[in-house]
Image (cartoon, rainbow, N blue to C red; front, top):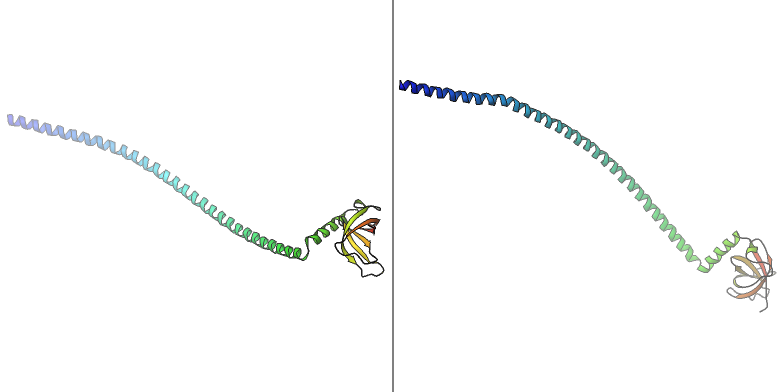
Length: 195
């Protein structure tokens, strides 16, 4: 009997051991679906995040393409503007060269006289001189072509002033004392004073 009791104990132990194993298996089998549900929920959450990420990436790609198109358009406009600026600079350089050439044709003194003359034409001659005024002028030119009226030409603040020179003894650059004898709209007549 002892052998059968001992067998019974072993058998019971086996059964208990199997039951414990079954309980563990049952617990595991019950836990697996819950774990699978949790895992599936996580996977779904990741899927949603991936979809959102893909949408964001697609949105960023569209934004990048739009920015790239805008940049290319801006570069094209900049190239056009730079070409226009270059053309304008070349034109300005050409005008500057032309102006320098023109300036080379005239001395500064001639240009200053012309500027003063233009400014004098804009003013009333009586703002510059009056009949009876005396001045010292520098002869700018002589006109001895008309034998009946040889004269010297001077400028007073740009106002053309004619000085009779019957002896034709005045030359460009001579200083002459004069008295204003008549004032027109844009010129004056003067007589030489004996000095």
